[in-house]
Amino acid sequence: MNTAETTENQHATRPPGAVARAMAVAACVALSACGGGSDSGFSFMPIVPVGPPAAPPPAADGPMVRQTTAGKIEGVDDSAATGTYAWKGVPFAQPPVGALRWTPPADPKPWEGVRAANKFGHGCAQGGRYFSPAPNDAPFGLAVREGFGKPVGDEDCLTLNIWRPSGDTAKLPVIVYIYGGSNISGYTADPGYDGAQLAKRGNAVVVTINYRVGVLGWLDLPQLKSGEAKSDSGNFALLDQMQALKFIQANIGAFGGDAGNVTVMGQSAGAVNIWGLVVSSASAGLLHKAAPLSGGIAFAPRATAQTY
Image: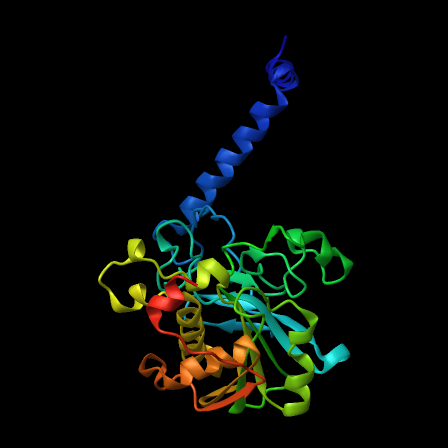
């Protein structure tokens, strides 16, 4: 066997992978030699590993997102149907439950991200009557009668709702509406308190607020006294309304409202509560005009009222 045949046989039996590796090594050596101090202009550049792609930037807030002191909320563009924007079920205080029951309302806890504000919050806990919410937050209608004489609503109820005309007009007057119901019933999801038409026709920002009613809103017992004036007043419903007005002062500008032009309006028990707000020094600076509608009032000494 001659030398040529031997070489040919060796190439024939060498694995293809070995041949490829040998060629790659030879190429690297050649390239390295070309750049090794010569003037050829060539150099060997090592391959740099590529990391994972960068995360995309966070999505921009939608046009119905507003920043409040507690966090961002996203409302609904109802321009086509009513000519308004709306934000519903916005917390202005913590749920008045547990240790917060029969105490002044506490500021809402901040939340992360964007909170949906597209539906009403719970009506406050109360005994079912004609002006009360239907059981399980069912829509207004014949379902309301299913709650007559039964507990309805929820203690987690301190929310408000905002309507404004479509567009970006700023410094609009603000109307805060307080529902009636003898201070033992009522809720903002009642269709009679829908603020869209008032906002559109009045060219104003309209706010409706929930507040505690009945025994949870007005209980005045010696066993509840703590030595703190607001807590001992028993006027928890009125304090809820003041808390809502404070939230409005701090945030209504984000919705195009003028915090320096707030009118408080309400009917029946809502009107009575407005009189309380007007004469109380605790609400100083929170309202500028008042429109009480059809509110009767009776006076009695506190001792008499406590045994009513």
